[in-house]
Structures are given as C-alpha cells and as structure tokens.
Length: 98
Image 1 (cartoon, rainbow, N blue to C red):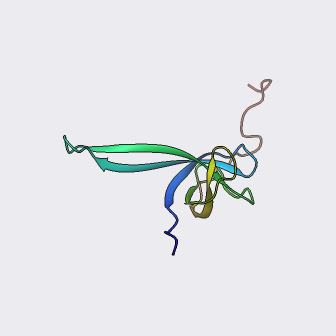
Image 2 (cartoon, rainbow, N blue to C red):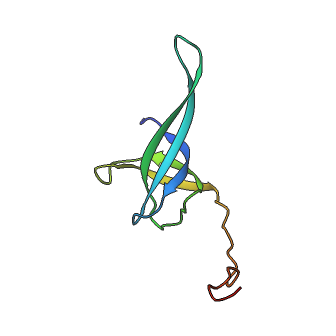
C-alpha cells in the first residue's frame, strides 16, 4: 500500500499564471536548543485546473506527481474565499470637479 499524500493549508499569493497558483504555507516549529517557536514559511506552486483560486483565498493543496519543473502540488479545495473589495463606480471625484 502506498503512503498517504501530504497535505498543506496556505494562502494564495499569486494567480497570474494559467492553471497555476502560488501558495504560501506557514507552520510553527520549536527550536531544538532554545525552545523558541519559529514560523517556517514555504511557497509552493500548485495546479489549479479551473482557475478558481484568487489572491487571498485559503486553500488545501495535496502532493502529486510532477507537472512541470516547479509544480508538484495541486489544489484540493478552497477553504475560505478572500473578501472581495467593492469599488463604487463614480465615487472618485473627476479632475474638473471642485
């Protein structure tokens, strides 16, 4: 029986590539000698087949076979959507208005 695939939870940093997102994963570890908690950050390129992820989304990624030189992870699910910023059309004053 094969081992379980590793999973990570992180935040999407970039969605500018086609079918690929850049995910920041943070985890905390204790320093072996000083026992201080450290934040370890890692960035992973993950495959997003339908281009559903947006910047700021919290996603679960799962390890899979290599798809390219850097891409060895795939987006399994979107845990939490990033808030969408609403901009009202015409709310900014025009240059000629005083």
